[in-house]
Image 1: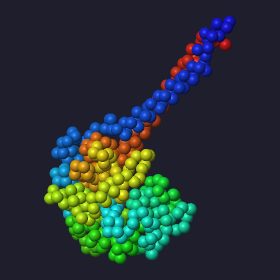
Image 2: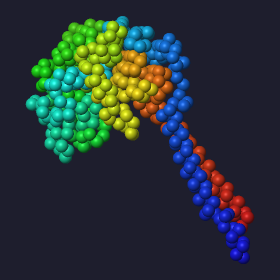
Image 3: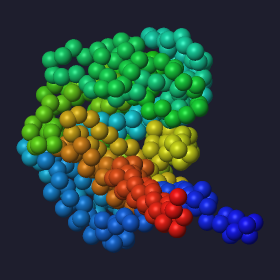
Image 4: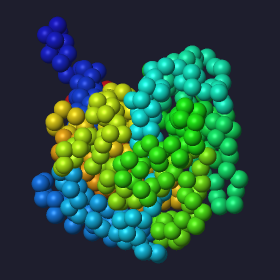
Length: 441
């Protein structure tokens, strides 16, 4: 009798179910890890063109722009700092290399240069309390120490501000909210944004994207320089870099401004902002080409920064200052899109705004290779094509491509989970049925 029990023990229903459960768990973990590794490493992602074939990439990118853009677009490709491809198109008025596009959050990269310019001149300390430079407005009291809010943390989105902005802007004819009032509570906050510039989290602890932080930097620039923000930026940054068409405030009667379109190709309005430092630089493909070139040494020996910033300041802007999910993602005013396989990162900034503005400017400082795509009429095309360029150029999946691929991969991940769980349940049912046939009650 003892021997029969010993023989039956390995075949007990409970032990069998435990093994099935353990196997299913391992399969679930393995499947999840496999999908995650594919997203991070791009195993199944096909590059837009053969690596190293610049002409083929330009042809493929332009074909996508022609097919997917319902409005207007300006595209420039750089190789070792030289323009090797350009493309311009519009559903309305003609677009060329000098046409001004409203570039949304790409504005922040230029604003960060304005901050770093003041720091390089010793007029602000990146690590001093930002309140040191403010007289027109103050951060409201809260649970966290406002003195820990510094310019360095503001430009890297690590100041603990919880505004969540996102600005929607003001329609033509609407009164534009004063900057100080907008800082207190933005009346044009994008849906879901709190809109109050306040220290709602511990400064320095984590990355919290904050358009309000750049509105605050706009105020700091005005207070320290004694000039209107746009005047300072044009004098200190834009003009010295050869960005002679660019402006944060569009003058009345401005010409050669790209029309705005929605995703159906219908004409749309351009909005005005209280905080153009965060959302409303108007610039052209030609001017942004000068800007990207200023991030590297010039062919004539001109230093990176072109005298506006020191090369050391550029290096500091490209150093990781903020992390998401443990990944180095943000420098000072720059997005660190992906490793460039040379010890640094492909850097730059993207922008998006309603109804369908999407812009991107990115450069690999190690090679001088870069891409610019400014467009309206598609809410994601610039970011998608720029992400394809990063993958084609480096073999690495960039920050935004990974996020987009994750959204597309989620149903596949869930389908795998469902198949594994259904299989485990089915096997359990079969095992139980066989046991009942062998050992009827």
